Image (tube, rainbow, N blue to C red; front, side, top):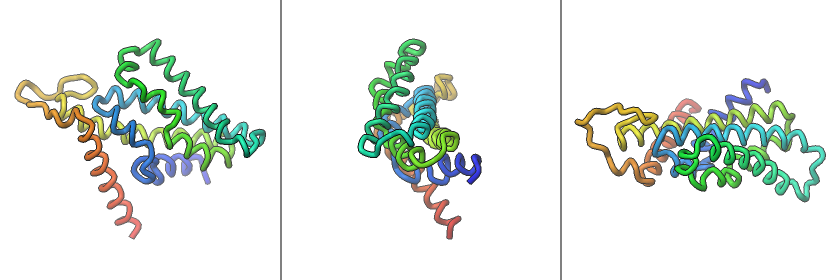
Length: 198
């Protein structure tokens, strides 16, 4: 399998959110603003790609009996780096994201890619797989936050798009809207996927 195919499969064909329904807690919680979604997505890409690379690099030296603990420790180390960076350089966004940055450690996407791919493949392939999964996750977050911020605040990335004539939809600021948008998104993608497959 080529590097391009690995990326395309993990980012789109087997997307962790719309195909495997993983990591949806953060997808529902941080998607009220596009800035939050983008930064959360970049944090996941960083932690996922580098943890997959490291886990693959150490796979031959990791005993099976403690494999999951080692994987969690590696993921936690990269997530802590993300958390420290956000607190130091983007404190406002760090406060808005709250505990969800720390919860990247327990995100099923990271553990799933570590176990399904990184523990069985070469480091560079694992890095690309992690990048693909992270990019796919970020795209889903950005699509949801685009709709929520546009209709909920009348803005995109904090820049006003709609004028004074626009009445903000308060439902879009609330978490249930993210749930319904995500459900519709998954439905559309899967209908299209199965239609093309048939």
